[in-house]
Image 1 (cartoon, rainbow, N blue to C red):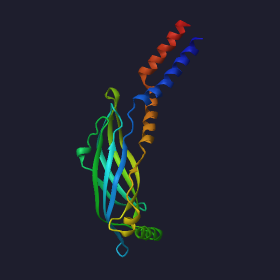
Image 2: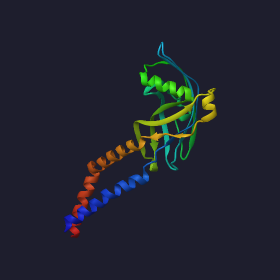
Image 3: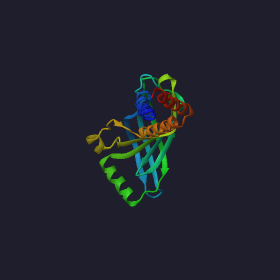
Image 4: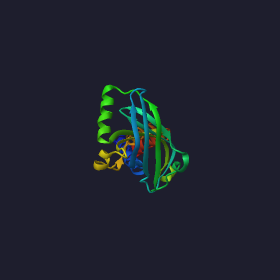
Length: 227
């Protein structure tokens, strides 16, 4: 039956589209914190002030051989006990471009004082980590970027969020010096979730694109004539 052949061809197109999409869509970049150290991390309960000096070395890897990534903005937010104590925007250079199959490294320094309100359990946890000489710091990267994939296809998204769970030793602390050194930490990449959204939008575009609809109508007519 001609209409059944048309449905079969349409189903083949719909099934092949995600496969082609996964082949040609650029891979997500990888964010790694290769080194982190604290030279100051103290909390004054009287005026609720957190003094900090955190040094980071961040590596960004573009795993694509034929796709370039342009970073328009990268913000680094440091959190302790779900309280943001520092937020910096990385300079435009040299992070504006991460070319094909390229790795770039960036040093980031977070230093200053921040007024924060800790609950009793937060202060208790802070005191425990002070004794241990190592602190649990949640680093979040907010990334705006544009990817140029195969055939110069452009993929953009207003914002990605990268999560890095860090265990950072305090320098000059006997406890951390004897027991802990910072371990390279791979950040959890929420870009994959955004990628799925892009895929859904692409499928929606595929289904509602007038050119595709005309093509499917032509396939039905061709199948009817052949049948």
